[in-house]
Image (cartoon, rainbow, N blue to C red):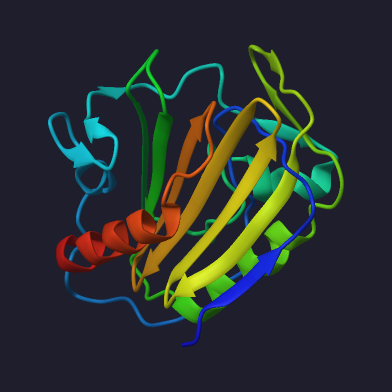
Length: 211
């Protein structure tokens, strides 16, 4: 599949966030092979990411649970992300590098039935693109500064990436989907430039060999 890219005017940033629940329900028959536990598919203590070795933490109160306007939930949420199809058999999430930059987190869902990978990604693309103008992420610890969707793309099969930015904070998001797993990723930092397309593609390859 050729890469699909959309770039919008705007450069704002946000705190680590959540995605939006999209269609793309499991459509295939259930398989006799038992899926791997969701928690085992997350990055573990000691694993490495582009920014160094990881230590796992609980997803904290700085992660968004809603967005203003509501049309931007898909672009801002990681926790309870609407981009993940409903009907999962297992779910797990974790944050990493607590108190350090970038703030990185993953949320994974495992499915007994086979996902329509193409539909999950394209439905996610459409949902994220609905975020127009300024968006504010709302978390238990407060509201973020206004942010804008500055970039979104499908760089490879089964991968969607997008960026929410403000002048002082940037969050790069990814959605990686294989036949029975949907993974949402977020990396937030004071500086932009996290290579989410490459990282989300790498995580998808890892999932494909483990799920």
